[in-house]
Image (cartoon, rainbow, N blue to C red; front, side):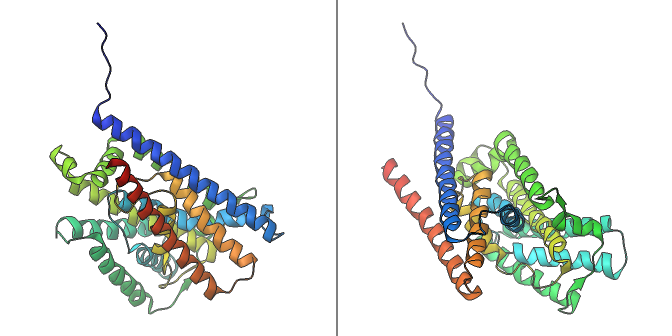
Length: 333
């Protein structure tokens, strides 16, 4: 008498999700390689060590912001306030360090603390005040944080940061930017959290099937509070890198950063419907965005046309997400 082993429904769904994610990552990676091949033949300067390291450095800020955005999109949410959080975090750090003369360590703590706090506020607005969608709550905090950044600085930049703060965004280890090393380390940490911890499984569960997640006893509100707090923290960390690059904190920093971050996440295989997406896919998406911008600069495309091109990339990324879901529904039917 033989016994046929059966896979539990939950395990089967998880296996299918993993397969889809691998396929989507490979597609994004092939797109990145194809883009690099095209630009290599289009510009003699593209495939040089200096330019490759420049792309790595340029991609760091969006990579960090996109990592926080990934968590919110995994829960079928979104965070429109990341650019404003970045600006408020760095200008308050500037006031503490440059204006008040406090320690750079204190300034970094203030920067990261402000980012995490505003992210927590986003989560509280969504969970405790029961606002209908994170689009509403984060759009509100987007305006509030940007306005506060303008008020506390009188709309003026703050410059001349100490070397300790500039190191993260402006330093190198050999030819490799420290900011890109930071990105790799943070992405590796988030990969472990999302794939090998309980909180990671809960994040995927909330986005994949919130009702089943609630019935299984998982506190959805706590998961959302964690996710939006981390999104704010990552925006502030990206702000530290930005300050290191330009040696300045200005209240209009981070404008439209949410668009690039969303594009990176969706290009990397995540879905606005929630429950799908990976850390490394998001990194590939962020690299694609950086390569597109770099290539347009090398080809002497005007900034106005670059804006148009990036907008088209974002629209196409969202459209691909729609097509993926239509295909998935047909397979289930």
